[in-house]
Image (cartoon, rainbow, N blue to C red):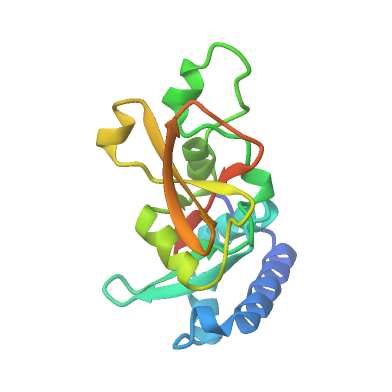
Length: 186
């Protein structure tokens, strides 16, 4: 990802959207002040571009934490369901290329890379679910351990019956109700 910067007007509009969401969801980040987040964002225009991609694909990114060791704010996709603009994708490039028929347009890992974000891990997904109830009708691919991926599988999660479930599927599978949620560190 090089030279991906939003025009000034678009940056300002995105910052307003993010600030409004930040204030609406104070429970996600009680100890964090918007002014500090905004300062970090303004100093990292490529991160604003990635957040815009998360927003454009209906992820509704919001701050969910702060890593003191790396001095980074953590943004997750906080849309109630898996982001609409990121569904019907298989897990990764290898899975995409292995399909003989009915290939999806892209994969979750490829799309995340193009957007400058990472797939949530299972642990991060479980943290998201402590903030509310997400993926009640959809599911989301999560970062899959290499040992599982090497055997052809991939993991996805959802929430049903007030419980977070982790499942497996062939990495080449894709469904209209399965997408992925991303993480951006700023």
